Length: 189
Image (cartoon, rainbow, N blue to C red; front, top):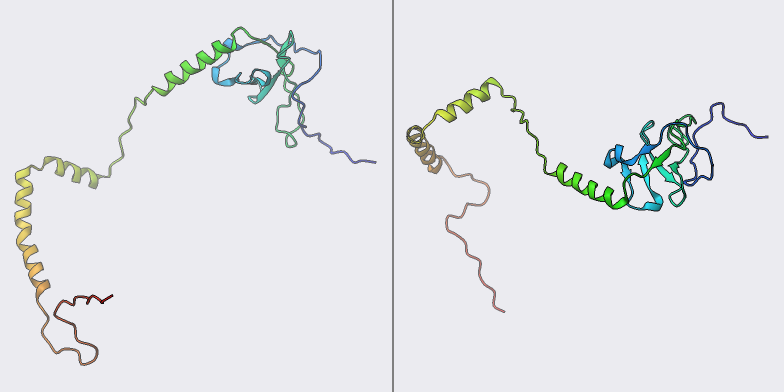
C-alpha cells in the first residue's frame, strides 16, 4: 500500500507527446512573437516561450501536419502544484521559415548592439566637492604658479630640517652606523 501526497506536484513530461488533442485557443503565429522568444536553431528540437506561463516549452510534431506546444504545467517540476497550463497542446503556425527567422534575429541583434544609452545621469555632489571643483575650474596657470611659489620656501625649510643630525650622545649600546658606503667584494671563482 502506497501513501500519496495530499497535493500532487508537477512531474517532468516527455518532450514528444502522441496525443491528438488540440487546444481551443487560437493558433500562435511565429511572426507575432518576439524573436528572442523563439529558438529554431535545431528544428527538430524547436522551443518557444509560452505566452501564458512564460516558460520555454518544446514544439511537438515538427515532421507532421500539426505543430503544437507540448502539454506542460505552470510551475517547476517536483516543486509547484500540478496545474496544466491553458496553452498546452496549442497549435503553432509557421508563417515564417527558419532562414527568415535567422535573418530577422541577426538583424535584431545588430540593431540592439548598436544602441547606446541616451540619458547620462549626473553624479551627486556634496557641497564640499562642488566648491572644490568650482575653485579648480576657476584657477589659471598663473594662479597655480603663484601657489607653488608660496609653498616652495616652506618645503625647502622642511627638507633642511630633515638633513640636520640631532645633537647629543651616541648610544652606548649597539653597533655604530657606518658612514661609508659598503661595496660587496667579488669572490674569485
